[in-house]
Image 1: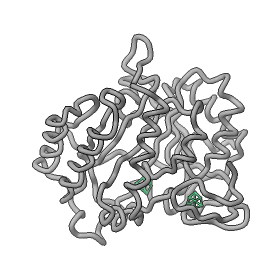
Image 2: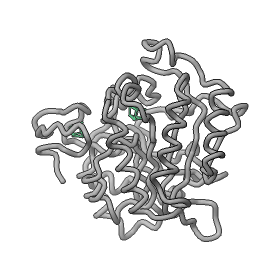
Image 3: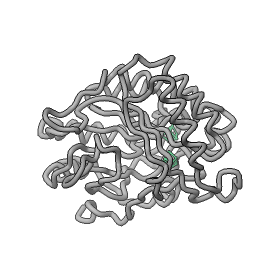
Image 4: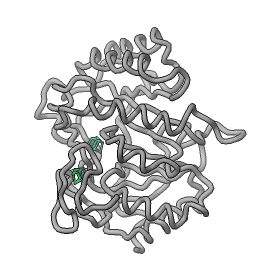
Length: 302
Ligand code: SF4
Ligand code: SF4
């Protein structure tokens, strides 16, 4: 796996990233915007109370979601260049700070360096590695992560190609995300927990955020999950806190919050399908999704 003819993600740009950039806009220099404890993931990842998930936010992204809350780094590419050795030190430092896991956020475009960094320190880390992505992945790439990743935390965003094309510029999103999720579940097996705690040690958590006006698409995804993944082999996290961000105003139909009715219908469908292992939110508790400051915290000394 390297950057010289990049096929890391479904865009399959085949560019030499040591000389130019592909669709994601990332060169071969690994870049990240923040490495810090984060308490805003699902409770099985962030825990409750002290500590948190040791998140490393990588710059760039292979998707272009019009509602991206991290657009400053995903399309703006804000971040600091790091070597694999720096990244390895970041992982160790996060564990020293009390991280429950190493949470790689939007990592796909830098996997060659991330694997190098993990090779350097894997034997010293005693916490799980979380792969946190938009779900737009190639199975061939995921197979190279077997043995490196303990927990997959993918989004499953869209079923309908028209929606994924319009809002994330990826008409083939589901075509790739569906087998990618199956591969993730195959690698991790059913969820298992850190002894004596509610923290996940291994497993796959499928995240789905209900979009305004798109509840039927959400329900199609739930049917696919029920029909395509072995029962009890994953957790599901149904998110209600869609917040218009970035270019959402270019699409008036999604430039609003999700209603209680919309979210409730999706939750009802999940319950009817028996998809109850995981997380659902009280609509009354929906809040603007927390976006951490991208201020190079945890990276300034490199
Ligand atoms: S990671 Fe970037 S350069 Fe590589 S295939 Fe994907 S979009 Fe293209
Ligand atoms: S996958 Fe996530 S980080 Fe990437 S553009 Fe979409 S919302 Fe932003």
